Amino acid sequence: MTQKSFTIGALAKKAGVNVETIRFYQRRGLLVEPVKPPKGIRQYSERDVQRVRFIKQGQKVGFSLDEILELLGLEDGQHCREAQEIALRKLALIRGRIESLRTMETALSNLVETCANDSGRVSCPIIITLMGTSA
Amino acid sequence: MTQKSFTIGALAKKAGVNVETIRFYQRRGLLVEPVKPPKGIRQYSERDVQRVRFIKQGQKVGFSLDEILELLGLEDGQHCREAQEIALRKLALIRGRIESLRTMETALSNLVETCANDSGRVSCPIIITLMGTSA
DNA sequence: CTTGCCTCCGTATATAGGTACGGTGCTTAT
DNA sequence: ATAAGCACCGTACCTATATACGGAGGCAAG
Image (cartoon, rainbow over all chains, first blue to last red; front, side):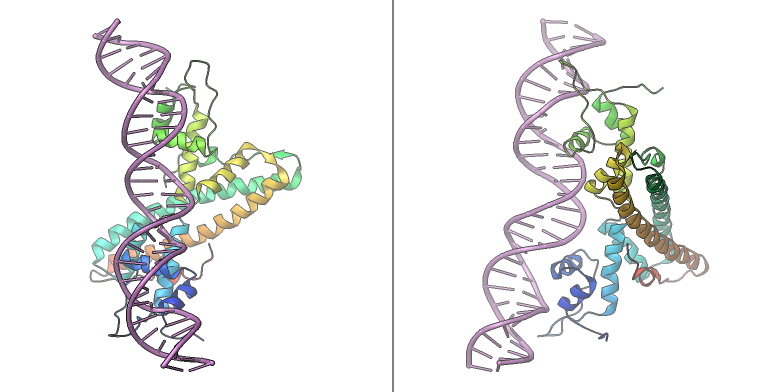
């Protein structure tokens, strides 16, 4: 069962990161430090777990923490024009990256296929096919 | 016009990186250091430019230099079984990343669209939609 | 034949993104 | 009421990926 609020240690565990990492993200502004009840312990929610996971996903696809901060800013809601501008910039990046990845995917699939037929040496033209993309 | 061979400085310029970076990649085994003619200067080719660009592309989609080294190993040709294994592993990663990026793409497109309709504040489903993907 | 610019090489420093450490003070189970 | 186990906080340290620095030597233009 899912509690609605828990400690930093539990948050870290749920999100699959180190406690120190949570604190690091707070310092970087990627996570809000919940108010500390006087004499108490800060409480976290599922929402925080999701944010951390989002950060990790973003990193895996090549975004820096600063970029992810921008993306999270969109989530938090801000004036439309600014949000839209950022979103459009990120969209362009994302699309370029998808294209790069697809090119790699094709090259690797071909390699695997070739391999299935022939069991000698193989080589994969992964480089040539990737040039010229813009992401 | 494209010369067939040039110096490290030219290579760096063509590839859009620093000379020091080229040397760093050589130390890391990502680029082969061309033989130095006695008393001479090492010569580089378009192929090197492509390799460097590939490295940069790879980084943009979230691969580390070590992972890129593996991918370049495929390009260079090696025994099938090993190559296939590596290729399959990378394919899985790549597919996961494409999926993550697509999710982000959808979320951001929606955001942009919402923006076009509403000129107040927006709240973006970006985080929620991204949770649980596996890349 | 000197002045610059470049290669070459080794070493030192920088930046991003964590990760570890050490002390203090709650709470809780024993 | 004491010992364990966390939270909290500041600071120090670590890894990956560059980037900079500084001296020696080659080559070409003025």
